[in-house]
Length: 170
Image (cartoon, one colour):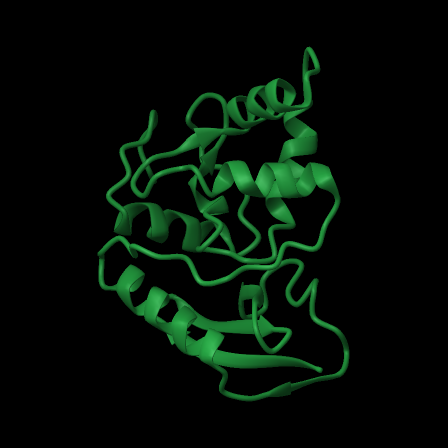
């Protein structure tokens, strides 16, 4: 059985998902690819992993850096897992470009090059927003590009983190 839990953030509703022990999803309500890892049959229920995730979210939205990560499950292809693991290394208040991530994937894979567009596809399908910080990924020129939760949320998250970008936030 899979479970969900609702959290109200300063940016709107967030749905958490779990297999009962590990966090399997975290989406802004209505975002692109919402519930991508959530089976059709699930039930809303409080769980210890949701308590831990809510504590992480409360710390994050209070403007502090959480010093822990709830247990995460990343069921996906090896490529997507690698991209998401790289996202986990982007520090709070910092950004990384799709090209930089592609170069790191190529390095880890032992290949000469990796497509930044392929990386963008994996970033956009991240099922655990915020904790796996896909909002910290920007375009090559420092331009803010798409975010499954909405570009308005990406801007607010980066402002909240007081991120210094290569170009100004509109």
